[in-house]
Length: 175
Image (cartoon, rainbow, N blue to C red):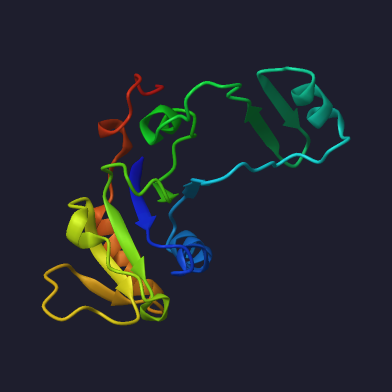
């Protein structure tokens, strides 16, 4: 399994790009999974449902399964937020794992930048940024660049820069 990240300021279009990139990569015959970092409290459960009541009652983990999907919720209950390497081993192997967020971790990343946001580029301060997906390439930038709407070019950048996830994991990789 190889890993690549998408990093950028809020509103740059990371999620929009990701939901266009995933079907393109699948159409190329690749299996793709994602990890999304949230900067705030979030809930994937519905208040009042059984799984929600299990968590609220104090369960550390609640796994909900059906014939269509399963979801594992793990309550940190005051423990530190897990870092990306601590989460990688929980993922099933795929051809490409795309990480949205976790911009402070050192995995290879494509910076998603939109000029209208009027925010500075991240690549100047992050050596792990290996390419840019932008609507306005900065003059003199030595990194490979692709236009935000050029999904094939961005897919090429992602595949060229992706690194084996085993290099980043802190626990032994499952066999």
